[in-house]
Each structure stands twice: as structure tokens, then as C-alpha cells.
Amino acid sequence: MTYATVMVSLALDQPNNARLQAAGELGERFEATIVGVAAARFAPPLYFIGGAEAQRLIDQEEASVKRCLAALEAEFRAATRTRSRPVEWRSATDFPSRFVLAQARCADIVVSGGQSPAFSDAFSLVSPKDLVMQAGRPILVVPDKINWLDLRSVLVAWKDTPEARRAIAGALPLLRKARDVAIVEIPEAGGDRSAAMTRVSDVAAWLARHGVTATARVPEAVGSEPAAVQLERVAGDVGAGLIVAGAYGHSRFRELILGGVTEYLVTQTARCVLLSH
Image (tube, rainbow, N blue to C red; front, side):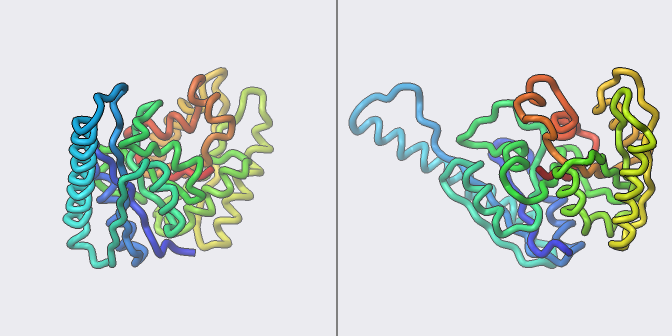
């Protein structure tokens, strides 16, 4: 398995440099086509004046959206000009989530920015949380301050769920490029640590059959400390530049309100994260 098409989702009024850099690196590492994608549409006011004045306002705002999309295309082409890979651009005056999710059918992996607001503007921004839930592709979330895709050390945050299995399968091309890979399961309070070690050892053996050497690790449980806090500590210990994880093992609404590992991974700013649902 490899990545033949890397898609990068660009956003209006947000920095795109980091995600463009990561997408460009992926394109070159895997000799893949790089597809840039963006969409936005006119957000109507809460009330309208009537007649010709209303139409003038609509035409003016729609023209502004088209100019913004043209500027994003120029940004994409400038960022990929020196990449020795084919590139494509796709854009539309449409709801961003709907458009980007539809275009994901042509991609092997989708690169997105992080730190989206909990309730994003549906007219101008596609949230990585929506991409993770609906794209059917692995999503690489790249924080704005990351300036390269660091694969020297990769942490697989294991939980024995379908989401985690899909995430590690989708990450295989990246894991083969990594120098060090650690498979880590954060034990639940009162959980069987030996059973957890058996699970992560199985995953490490599966990776070995795919040409990836990985170490298995289960840290000691730390009372009632949240799993996200423990995961961050382990990521720091191994110097992870990338975390691979399944997304939303609980309902998304529960994690949004109560917090959880997925919410932490999408909003943290220290490293890239590959997520799959």
C-alpha cells in the first residue's frame, strides 16, 4: 500500500503554510499527485433589504468568495511549484464540508489544519472533526506551527477498536518511512495490564509482517489521570513527531462536551496527528 494521491484542504482566513508543506512532503515521499481543494459560499445576512439592492449585495458577496478561492488557488500553486509532482486544483462556491468530503473520494489521505473551533462557520471552514467522521480516508491534522512532517519517531495510540485498526492500516505507508515506531495502549483504571501488553504485542507483530519494526509499550496506570494527559506524557518521552490514532471511540458529542483523546489530538499544537474513524 502507498499513497498515490494526497489531498490538502485549504481554508479561508486561516494559515495554510503548514498543511501545504506537509502535503508537498507527502507528495514527494510517495511520488503522489497533490490535489488542492477549497470551497466557500456567501453567508446571507439575518435579514434582507428587497429588490435590486438585495441582488446587488448577493452579487458583490459571491464575487468576493470567488476572489478568495482564486487567492487560495494561487497560494496552492505557489507552494507546490517547486515540488516535482503533478498537481490539481479543485474549488467551488459550496459549503466547504460538503465539497471537500465529496472530493475525498479521489484521495488516499487528506491533509487538514488543526485547532478548528468547536462550532465552525459552515460557509467558510471545513472542520477536521467533520473530515475524520465522514471522509472514509485517513486525515492528517497539521498544526499551524509545524514546519515539517517529522517521521523520526511515530507513536501509535492503540485501543482495541475498529477505528484504531483502520487508522494503523491507513498509516502503513508513513510507518514504513519512520525511524522509530512505538505502539502504546493507555491502561484504564483497574484494567488488566498484561492483557493490554498482549494486544500491543500483537499489533507490533502485525506491523513486523508489513516491514515495520515497532516496540510495544503499556505504561503503568496513573490513578484517575485522563488518558489524554498520559498519552501526551508518553509522546513527549518518545519524542513523537506524529501520533496515529482511531477517532471518537465514544460518541463525538460525548467527547465534545466531556473532553477525550480525540478532542485533545485535534486541538494540540505540538505534533501532527493521523486520525481515522
